[in-house]
Length: 241
Image (cartoon, rainbow, N blue to C red; front, side, top):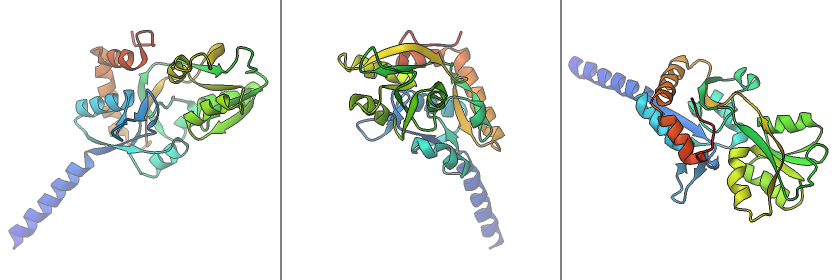
């Protein structure tokens, strides 16, 4: 009986350790090509492919969790998942609440898209997704900010005349503008914002941060991260030197 109890305890401990190696990857699933839901109903995109590769290199068993953008940081902090990998720019404000890995996408431009070249992006109405660096920029720019929960709604606001322009990551807007048949166009200058895109983690998860940082570094060094960036964002996208 004693051996049976010890064996059961050992099995329980081993199961606990195995379970501890499962990392839940939180993403929005609504921001192509960074992350989106494919026709099979699965999380897909640049960050899905990147995240799976990072988990393999870090020898972690990872599961994917979809979460709305406006609650993505609070739900990380409360433990609903262990990372955020959702096109999140590294900023000082966010870094006060959560921690970040090194960037896996260099700082890139944000841009305005509108239905006409004469759109007023300085004093008009500009749509942006809530709780983004783009929304914060618009709020300080002198334009009237219209915030929406999803990126699709920001573009729809321009199409239906609620907003003069939408302000978002240019990488997100490029395919939308190209596929609009001339109904949407870029206006004004590109705006560099943020310190690159990184994985968000709880500040207490220092060991997990180190594992992902090592995996990101290895992908930068062997060139596989640059290949992934070009695959999803085109040959002209910003890459690591």
